Amino acid sequence: MREVLSEEELHALYEDMKGPLYSFLFRYTHEEQFSIDLVQETFERVKKYEGNYNQEKGSMKNYLFQVAYRLLITKLNRRKTFRRILPFLYTSQEKTLDTADQMTVRDAVLALPDKQRAVIILTYYHDLTQVEIGSILEIPVGTVKSRLHKATATLKEALKEDFR
Image (cartoon, rainbow, N blue to C red; front, side, top):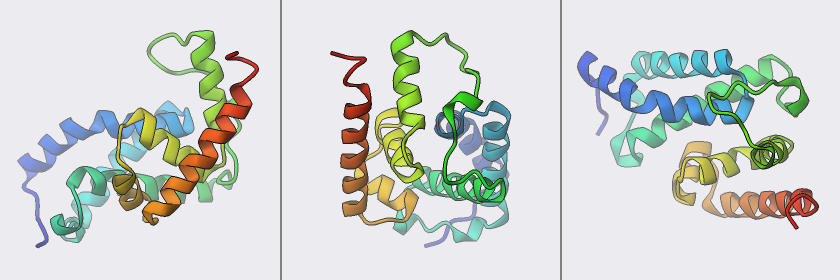
């Protein structure tokens, strides 16, 4: 069954989900304004195509992450930076100060291939299940598992000197 949201429901959903969506997008790009704009566009897209959400296919939370991820990839493709977002191009815009270890891990995550980075961020920063991640990224659970395994191995190798 498809669900149409009232203005009040959409506003409440926005208030509940703007933080998690922003966090996901910011951790992926490290661009504050770009992430804020994508959150806004996510909700504009949900409102415009509100009949597309089917609660039988998954939660509204997963649907919002899926819409946000699609917008992110589309925007990155348009900017021709889809293949790699270089960590040294970004200054830290997080509200709390990073410790040296947090910065090292963050840089290692940013250095991952885009597809692996998305799985790592959704798994470890948003505590989503592999099934939820598969739904958001529109990939099989087996692919989520393999990307997670490859990303974890890459991070372990990249960080082994820093965390002996």
